[in-house]
Length: 312
Image 1 (spheres, one colour):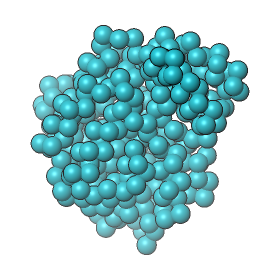
Image 2 (tube, helix red, strand yellow):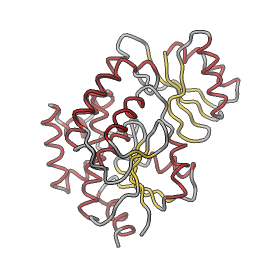
Image 3 (cartoon, helix red, strand yellow):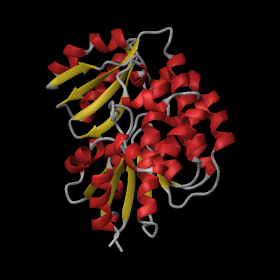
Image 4 (cartoon, helix red, strand yellow):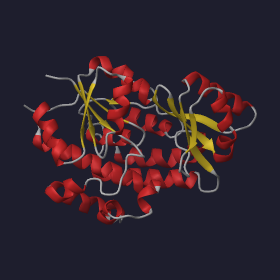
């Protein structure tokens, strides 16, 4: 049997129309759309299938992405019930989908949890000009040093997402990020691009959200892990409620070590399957661990192809 990792992308993977093929061809998807909408008072069909501003707002982006990912995962499990994951892994928000796929939280609770998480993140940044910047073509150590040096003179900038070699996202105060654009370029970065975001993820600016999120997680997460989840914070596996709550609380203010996580599991995994819209993680994995195969399930056609390859 192949050793399989089930993986889930984070914010930025969303797109209008994602999951529509599932919705149109699966009663499971229709029911999950209905239940999720009832839980948080959102018309997910309108949110996801029609052009609107809400899909780009963190409080709505997060449950929309998680919902489509869990639909893809649920339909796959219906088609291939004997396939078991060696581990689960997500990028940022995707770690909550990984937790859900592991069985440690019911998907309907997870929809509410990440909706509230998004609200808490927005609230933490509502009175400040926060943002994120993608640094391309510069090594991690150089980015880290620039952030540390900036911090020593009172600027609020931190490494946030370690995506792949030469691609690191930093977070902090928008003015401080903008002031360092030329510094990053002078150090050798090909690009230092401010992202269209009003939330600074995975940095100390989100500390006000930690305790409220911890309380929500305590009431929703359970001990039923089908397989371990890899922590974005430590790159190590965990499989208990206590660890999940503590690590996902920390994840708000600490960087996502996605690249390091993939390198840590690559030798033990034969195939990774990415669930949900797009091929964000498939693309990263190809550049991080070339010998690890990554498949994706984003619609009924890709589901059939993966099922044929994995389930037979």
